[in-house]
Image (tube, rainbow, N blue to C red):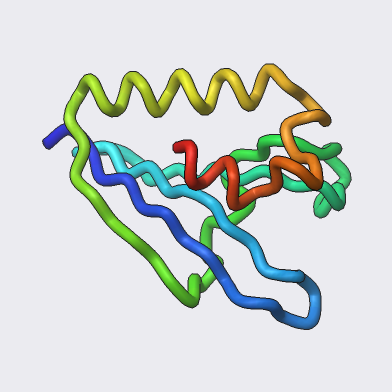
Amino acid sequence: MDAILKIHCIAEQSSLAGHSWIEYCPAGGNNRTFGTWGNDPVGKGNGLLEGLELGYAPSHSRTAAIDANQAARLHDVIARHAALGNAGWTIASPCSAFAAEA
């Protein structure tokens, strides 16, 4: 096992209509979160944002151990979504689509 991948979601809350994101937990490293956003939640634009969900309490999670090959594919998905910039979140491809692909 090289890392743990967690897929999280929260149900609708007063400030959010629900949200899904991933948490990447490398062995011996710091956990990192990645999620796509379409409402410019912190003034950094839309699309893929890193670290915004640290400390969020998910209502549901799934966890899996991943090996080095799976981690490399995950990083490819993250890089592809990051390259989309503001187009990294759309109505047709929201945060849940990113989390599912990851």
